[in-house]
Length: 148
Ligand SMILES: [Fe+2]
Image (cartoon, rainbow, N blue to C red; front, side):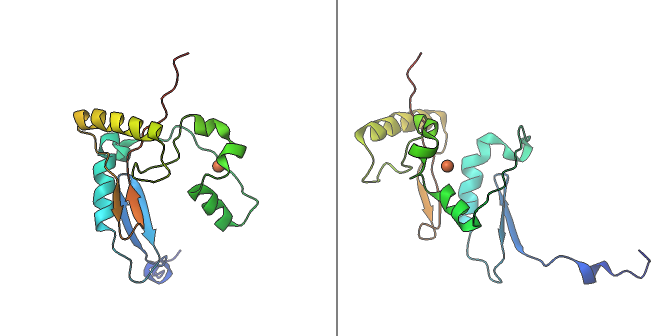
């Protein structure tokens, strides 16, 4: 390229961008919706993990032969988990909120036990909902595994 190349005429389109806890949030809207409270929550909840200094241990690539909207929906629900990968449900509980009316007594007892532990360790765990449930964060326990 010659000296007369004006890089400013060929730059990418600017977008709104925020980082929190090692994650990057990009918004393409001209006027981005508020996110400050959620960013503060993310930084607080993820601080113990020091994600800014985390290293990638494994990378994989999956080419989905599907509409991207179905892939995103698949990420947001777990109706398919029991049939597609039941091993996930051996460690993962279905609810993230112990006030969820569908939660079981087993779940609520485990949450209460783990919350007492997290409280003693000064680890954030409380369910936070921001912007009318657009953004939420909570610490959830994994199912207790029987000792083999
Ligand atoms: Fe899945």
